[in-house]
Image 1 (tube, rainbow, N blue to C red):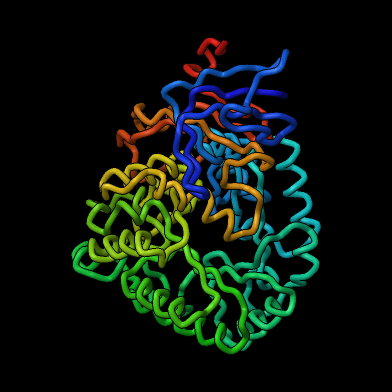
Image 2 (spheres, rainbow, N blue to C red; image 1 turned 45 degrees about the vertical axis):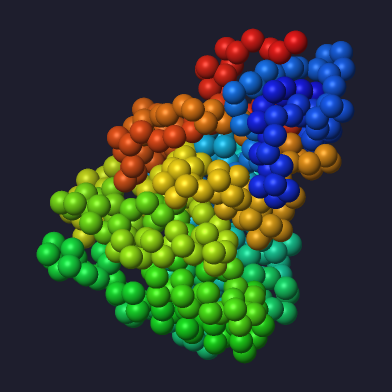
Length: 434
């Protein structure tokens, strides 16, 4: 399909482009920008006046729940949620049921995702068989099947010797290990960050040490092996400081934070609100401020949704027994721009953390706008506010700590490989440009 998007404010964090331009899409690619973007006969013309045209979002952590956990969400529902949130590329962790520890499972997931025609799915393979932390998976075969890295999701490896072998193996095959900084023993069974709130509510706590001890171990293994390491979902000021030092040392380390932790702190839990039961747990205002500072100074590479759909039955129970997780695919853009507004940050700079930076981190041709690159794009109405509610979310998982919030910026339309994959009714009703 040929399509000419006219009069949009084109914002490309990768190049710094920020101006009103026409963009021509042809055969799944961006064919022309600016004055050279002309409509031939038969080209669909879209008047995007008043809208931003940005690269499709790249989300580094979105659980799709298939295979095996379809009672929480289905691939179809979550890929639709991704499109509604402007997400065109996403990384899914391996903690499905069964885990993604065999090539056939990875190939099946990718085939099914491609057949649905939604966002592009990039699986992480299991680092150990069954995520049990004992025997290593065949990383080379999993990489051939389509895995872009290897992870334990939120299940730590108890045996450090196994972890050392995993780093060695990954380095041999030039793969990246993705690990959540969770010590196997410290904070086990905890549901809230250590501090006054957890003590007052009588909740089992998770100390910052669980993050820093794990990070110290990881960095020693990186020094010993040279393996590339991605730290998934930092949550503490002390953890960010350790990453900052590791990067200053020249270690091949990258990291991300969740959009939840940019905005929320432990006090937001209130009176045992299970929507705030997250993993890692929400920490203090000091930690949240350190996360924001770490983004601005470049210590933190990306913001992810940490999309984890949970069924209502797993949330409508006491806080200590509730399942951790929240829906996030549809909130990633708005929460990032809300942070930019609160921090007086240029939106072009903020958008980098959810477009070009994560795309570069996983090595895919996405997250940018330029002639010849895939037309994975998102049209955004920056002036529209939308209310987060069960009715407004397409994800099968409706639980979110932002329920009832009025958030800025609404996705009007999403293109994947040049095809209009999602559009709001308001956008669909717009007359074509001339």
